[in-house]
Length: 450
Image 1 (cartoon, rainbow, N blue to C red):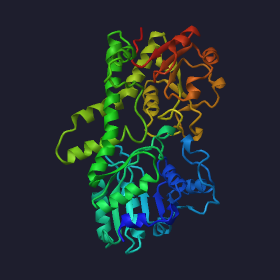
Image 2: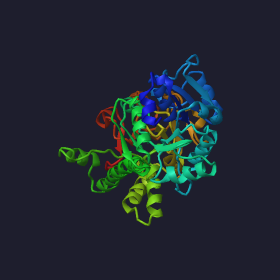
Image 3: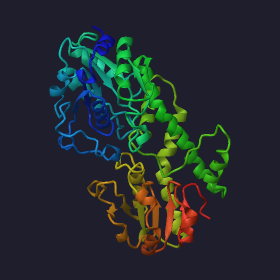
Image 4: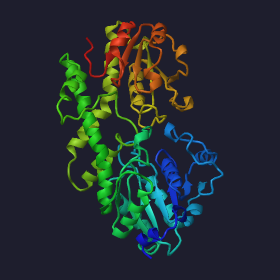
């Protein structure tokens, strides 16, 4: 019986078992989503701490949208383990949602994809024709180039023992409107019947469009360029945020004026780009372009602009302090926020870290207030402020992450604790006119210092 017929013959979703390898920011909500849709789910993670936390019905991630929705241990359709070998033989379909970071020299790190694939394929029962789907972000060609040699080495046969496919995750942590149950999905697979079956599967997960797009490489490329496009658009406004202040023009005034035209897409500058997607995925595309001998000049230039923003902002902060008559070595800066994104406790690739490093190199001390981040996870060089009433004797406050707790704080009280009430809005979300009325001297990314 083919896969499409197998789906059609199901009396209920509980008749099919889904495996999820990797229970992080993407994998755990995906596993929960399939469980909520009625499927039996096996979740696997190499971290014993993560497994123990999920088994206890708690959320190990920093995404508040996952709070209170982790299935409780009593659920008969919910199985969590550190053992891929235990889980995979129970599953009809296995989804791999492992990290795809970059190395220190900005090259794609596919070690997690390879390790997860090896563990899964070694555990697949012969003749089961288990579908294995990669959801991690990769460049075009990775799924086949990485997994097919593993399958061949193990003596598995495509179409008999295993099928492989690619369906990129589009989950947006901290964004309830774009969770796993409410985003469109695309499926790539060399076998159209398997592709159609996966469309049926993911249609049970999300209320949005799910479509089969043909070969693996199409789906892989679609995912990576989604984030490349955002990186380029953000790089444009970040570059403008450097240019216009030199002309004594506020970039936000320019962007607001331009946005009156119907086809202008409005972006906002910031201290940098963070997270596990936008600052990472362009390097996957750059690498693949290099492999096929085609320059990726625009993508490379955009990444350079965004990567350099923390250092640019650090120099602006030094200029602010210098104009106030302060020497760098005797000043103390308070970061409001550390995570890469508002309302999410995720410090991966946060621009706050290189910004703090750039200030430290200039002799400036840095304190951080971020109620979403575990105090134990900060770099040793950072002074952690858990209570803003204890934030004394700072010379400049910098809004790095637009958490509600950082935007809507008691600014009058904080100003009284500062050596002088100075604030730099690194996200352009503060009511600077209102703060000025409270006695704050206000600065912002893309705004002239004068």
